[in-house]
Image 1 (cartoon, helix red, strand yellow):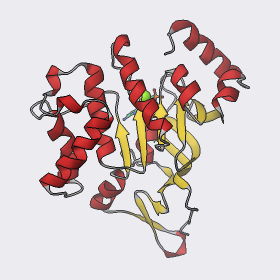
Image 2 (image 1 turned 90 degrees about the horizontal axis):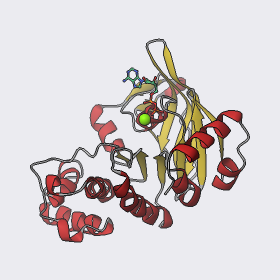
Image 3 (image 1 turned 90 degrees about the vertical axis):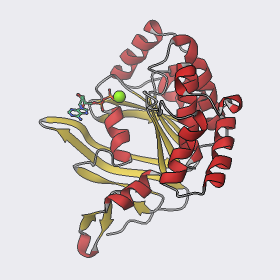
Image 4 (image 1 turned 180 degrees about the vertical axis):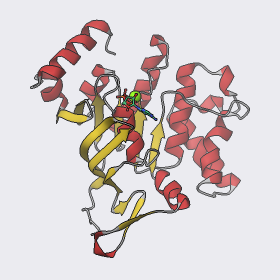
Length: 266
Ligand code: ADP
Ligand code: MG
């Protein structure tokens, strides 16, 4: 049956199961993200955070469960009689453009300028004209504070600036939700702050985002909701003050103890 969800829901996942061989990485994860909500996902390495994000945008089709962007089912099309069929790759690509993703490694084209990198998806996926794509890209680059760098090549930029270009590239596509997978983990510590500042700016403007991060400080003051995952399950979730301030599970207490003693939170 097609499941219609009410307008304020941006993205919904239900009963997501994903295994690699015998390794059941996601064991029935459900998640509803409202429009304008900022959700931070914390959890130890290997707990399934990246796999969850990749299931949400169908880069890794789940074995079981369903995902909706707005009221449209991602990856699958509902058929009469409770059946479903895989969507065409072209349709999935169009859906994916509504679910932006920012990766740990920025993957910019080295032989293209900042502006050309940001225009790429606008030209190839959104089929905008060059003048139109250029105007949208200029605004996105401005939004991440790199207005003076349109003509620069990635190699001439710091890692923090490159990641900001990566964010601009995603923003330019005007996705309904943005998934961030440890966007600051590959950066030298002194470059983390400028990327988090851009993300705080997006959060304060109520950009719908799901952020996998180890930056507990960012989660504490930018998230509307914090989710703690372990072993392919959501163990705890709620407002940051509750989840981070008064964790109810021993696993989260241990995780936070480790993180706040081993890493500096910015
Ligand atoms: P996290 O992002 O929380 O560190 P991941 O989702 O990357 O965790 O990985 C969870 C588990 O799934 C790990 O045990 C990892 O080795 C395994 N895994 C992830 N992707 C693949 C893959 N493509 N093939 C096989 N195993 C994978
Ligand atoms: Mg990961």
